[in-house]
Image (spheres, rainbow, N blue to C red):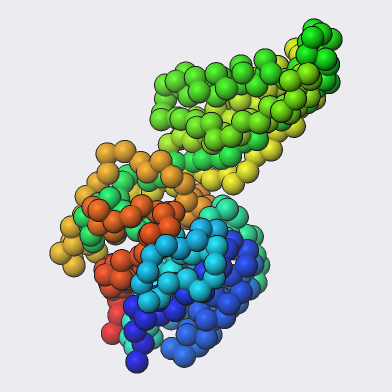
Length: 374
């Protein structure tokens, strides 16, 4: 007898970081085979895919869960705590995977009436690489998906409340590391150096103010790290590094912001005779929902009597489900984890098991409405 809560607890105990989800992949595939499916393994790294075909015309739906964990040491004291020091499921991907597995179990005992269903267990969401890697992997036949669906648990909202939004659900974001390198001089003769201090100082101001110049959408930046010179009173700095995250609810505005940051950095490097190195890290596009897919989600929640609300503002965090949303009409939604639940990426966090049943029922109802189940 399959128990999705115990399955989630099993995954929670063996968290694996992005790109290293090998054991998780094995557990997922073995469980799917026990339901009678023939999963395809190793997709986009350690992804797992199940395809259910009827051979009859009808909607082609896709449902996705993410599988990777975070490099955080768990502080919670529940019995299913992480057995791997320095890694934990602090974002709830164990719960998302259990939800999709619960759906697979439901589908294994029913007959799809028309169309097809694809279930994907995706690795490497946290670094933004997994979705694109799966889409670029030709080891599975993606076909023409009509609608794709996924969800994320969201602390701070009532437990079980369904959260959605037309257009942008979550923001585009990227990390940028800007390094200026010049030449040192004696601190008594700073005019003889190529000093990166001025460039770093002005880049700090620019990164904080550039988002305010974007008027067609929401944009923001956060400086996360600065390193300048060495702890030596007699020597001017040779290099300086500035790290920041940039984000926007509009992919167009996001591209503009990134281009402006690059342009300013290049200008200061040339002006001050510095070498410049820019690295862009963990790139995510905005996750943009499709109106028809949202209607299907809303109807399923209505059928089930679930509390459904439309968010006024997009989530500031990012999701690589955006790659599916760029490829197929999609609906990505949130489910409240509880108003007082520890936040995502917190060492005290643990996915609420109640959400497994809620999310899998929503997915099942969408399939029942669109494809028919017996």
